[in-house]
Image (cartoon, rainbow over all chains, first blue to last red; front, side, top):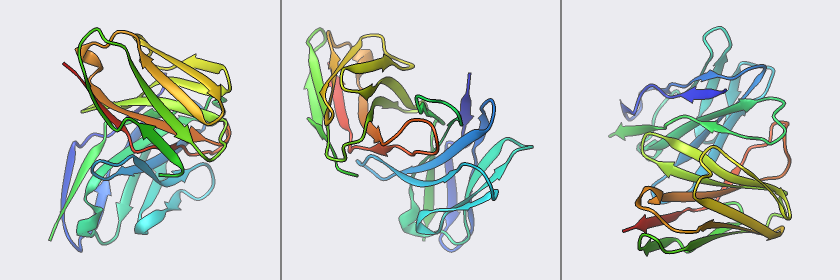
Length: 115
Length: 114
């Protein structure tokens, strides 16, 4: 069975500071990993994904994520947080050869960026 | 929200009544999914479809059924709603299976069962 964990329910950061939202995974084989963001009363929006290749993946709105196979982690990062980044963030993963494209989601991390 | 609409957006219903939620897409994507979102659980897959009339169960399918008679529509039915089915329901679509295809999500339906 595959699983994705987000160890922090909430992350608080001051505007302008770097932010990190943590994600660890347990996925057999080569994992495909994703980050989504959810703003209030909206559906999830795709941010970025890791499939293969460079361990540092760049995505929308200045976000990036670092894939670390030895630590089975895929942390989301941004060099300088904005108040508008405040939202709920979900990490998701699946096996690379999963024909049904089943995603397993973490429980979500609420990011609060304070001015 | 990537050409995906869900209806209704909000619904309050009583225990024991049937409820049908509709997902409609204009992207002509083959794969469609129903998830529920509950605090602390992230999103959990209820059912998915890999083509017209082709559906399969997800992680939390008990008490739910689905139907897909057209590429663009995917219906989720609660045959007899229970309070444990109070949740926010999201529909998602993806173009292909396998590979690196991300899913795109609709705006959600907030369902309250009293």
